[in-house]
Length: 113
Image (cartoon, rainbow, N blue to C red):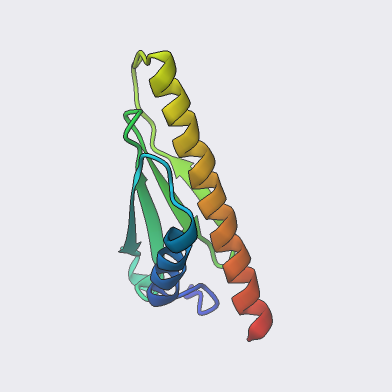
């Protein structure tokens, strides 16, 4: 099933670029990638590499135009100092803010169409 209502890769890339002009994901590296699903090649996703925890987060939009975050699963413990734990919390918080921003932009685009 193809989801023509999903934001395009270009829209997502523009939204992330605009977001990063006034805000950022703390301590993390953000990439906009094309979907690798053959039915959704025109859409994209956002991948965030966390620098203070051995994990990544992917932000994806579904056919109902709802953004969700998926934290990659890591096994085992990873001890953190207090400062690194705070930095990891900042990464998670600011990634959540980016996800909410993408949802708002998606909702605006849907209302305009």
